[in-house]
Length: 531
Image 1 (cartoon, rainbow, N blue to C red):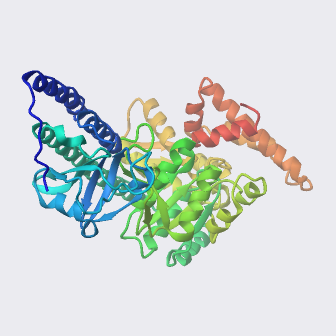
Image 2 (image 1 turned 180 degrees about the vertical axis):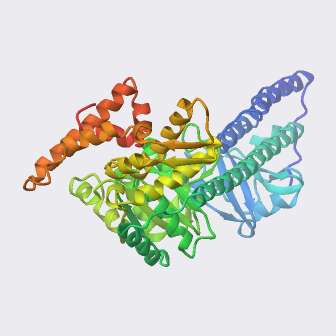
Image 3 (image 1 turned 180 degrees about the horizontal axis):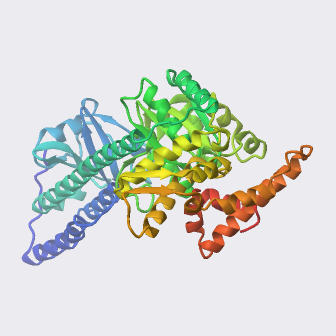
């Protein structure tokens, strides 16, 4: 029943009430144009409600089917947010939802109150109190309820219904704004997900695995064997050997090829963002989280997730990754809800993860989960004449880019390519060909349509001579392992120092010249004592 006792207001009281309403509603109107988390909008809404209409407790509940879920509370015990009220089991909620106007229950109503015992600071069941509820409508449909409760049975006798209706209109607008923002965020996230999937699919499809050496053929055979399964694969190998290309080949040959292949370089992100990138976050989970965002696992649902440089993951994230691998369930940052995903995982690293486990930098249980099927990608120096096949592939890419009829390799250039040990592997070869072709074209004044790359254009002679100086004499007895390691270390140090001199101590430029990831170059420099 609607309580009909209203107190007649004087003109002065009416003016004071109007000012109070204006003071309470103005901040809410201003909030409509601000970017705020949902829970903060709702908190401010209830705060203004209680300031305008004195009550001991207030709540905003959203209707989901036959259930009301509290989204925000003020004056009720915190566990109220975890409750779900089935409307059919609460007659007061049924009445509130059945009428378009606000409803006030009589103090002696025998209908049980859903908030009995939940008002903060009060023990036991509340026998008598004042209760007022208002339905909220969004786009003409019932969205939920606003409720006010007071311990004093006459607290709402002086409520101005016109002011309450004005507040309800603004509350509905607030809810509508939240709904619209969430809808736009979901649409934006879906578009971003599709764009990322298309981008990664196109980048994977533009490259193929090229080679005819026995080492390459063995790798291809291993890929074909494991691709037909759903086993987790750990791809190992030196920097620049093409581990991402291997992951793409496994996905393309698998039953998941029609689904996305999503990649994440774990070394390219600060520790604070890795968890969000993997598992996603909800709006307001941390500073800057202005919208819900799905992580890489959800984007790869049904397909394959490739984690490059997995050895760089922080230990805390490793524990959460292990949980997802064990049961396929994940939680976005800031969310209590679990998501089930079906993802085939391929991980890659240039680290010795077994040694990382022994050193305590990588979890042993995660290592065993990742290395169900290990695949080692051979370095370029072990692939013989594959270097010429790959050089031809990169030359053709540059020929098209530079608008030339043909680019050829001279005999001495081919010999130089075969002699070089390629510490940066295929990535170094790719960058070398692109750089050499561009320089050769720039120095060719006639700009011929057919360009010949010589050993001088490749500028590998200095590196080869350094390598020969550092290498042991093949006629001599084999060196001890530490001597070999010392020679390799000296060779690496000389390469980095020479590149630093050429690039004026610019580490980013050195990384580009050597064909190394910046993070890998930083680790190498620290190991060599250069940083």
